[in-house]
Image 1: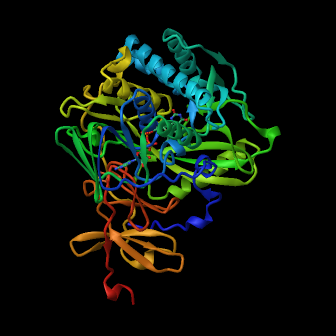
Image 2: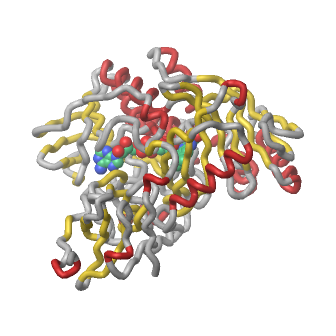
Image 3: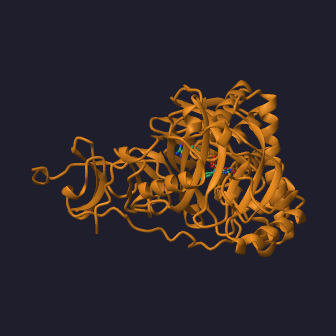
Length: 502
Ligand SMILES: Cc1cc2nc3c(=O)[nH]c(=O)nc-3n(C[C@H](O)[C@H](O)[C@H](O)COP(=O)(O)OP(=O)(O)OC[C@H]3O[C@@H](n4cnc5c(N)ncnc54)[C@H](O)[C@@H]3O)c2cc1C
Ligand code: FES
């Protein structure tokens, strides 16, 4: 056991996503009293806002209920490439699930991309939407055959791609698979614009309203603190379902990535969106904040809550970026997570054991087009239709049930002295475990270390200053409040024994 405390302030860049930082404020009301509606969509990420937009435009009464603020969670912290090119996916799909499934996956994602493009135009959403080519590149020549095989697989699913002998990047590469006419945007601005169009079509939008329980009762009865809402159809668009009859937390596993945005001169800008297949993987694209151009770089992934020194990943990413690209100051940095599935295909749709309950999860870090397709699919199912490609996302298909092995806290310490100011650690107290965070003045604050979802012991994330659960990816702020589910309740505060404080 060792202290994991590292002071956050030493990392370069402001904490937070550059997309969220440049998105307009929203101020929708909290849900209050007792209400009723045709559809409740829980979660205003890309899945939820897409479904809510389609359903309200189809004339249904819709309530979109968001725990925090619209578009600022996983979607708002992504790299926001809008593409059917999901690194090396089509060969994998053809070999493991067959050509028909691979074609349908391509169709669904094409549809998702087209929907985004159409809505940006139709609703005039200012979200820096730009058409770009997407590249998968390798620096190791032995991986070139993987790119060629992927190009061939892409052609089989009617996607247009070719292989180049190098990627148009300022560092050397051994080859690149190019897909033309893909796109990128600011995802937070997009969702805020789409939510506005959804409200204009008649939907009620609520923010800062965390749904804490649901019960089947001639439809669904939801509670959010003292408020409640009854609905005929319920969409759980919460990234991982917060409840329901199927344990999706065992069929998926949470994975985190780190991202940084560096100031860059226009002469050093890159043209396109890139993802490497070498280890550790890197993903690159251009973006901007209020002060100018940015290079956004994504680094290695790790199991959420299974990494005791997240800050080290940032230092490695900064070193790699400076070695390979001509960048200025690091301006933004953030951690984001998404859920993986064993077959790399999301789980979406109505859960037959719970009629009129719809879920969407497991986007494998490709949930911009997949998530839009998921929102379309759920809206169509609620309206009584089912597209041809629905079967690929079958939320009940057979996947290994023990895919998610979970894990234990990576932050155990023996005593308070092992925690530096600004750091956190987990300690035994009586029969339980407490999670202690120290303010920069050295004052310790304690909460229970048992995740309120299913009791796993949380890990201190020394970059974001959060408590991250190694089992199903719940994330809590230093003071214990929920940032990311499936947990719906805060980590309760704990009193430190007075003799520990002397
Ligand atoms: C680092 C990273 C980079 C990525 N880059 C890309 C990319 O370039 N292209 C791509 O296609 N995909 C990318 N992805 C994947 C993509 O971002 C996600 O798959 C997608 O955004 C998930 O959308 P969502 O709607 O499920 O989740 P979210 O956007 O998180 O929305 C869920 C919402 O539900 C709310 N919520 C949760 N619980 C409750 C509750 N109890 N009550 C009320 N509301 C609740 C949350 O607050 C949240 O706003 C990336 C993922 C990561 C981790
Ligand atoms: S998220 Fe499931 S136990 Fe923590």
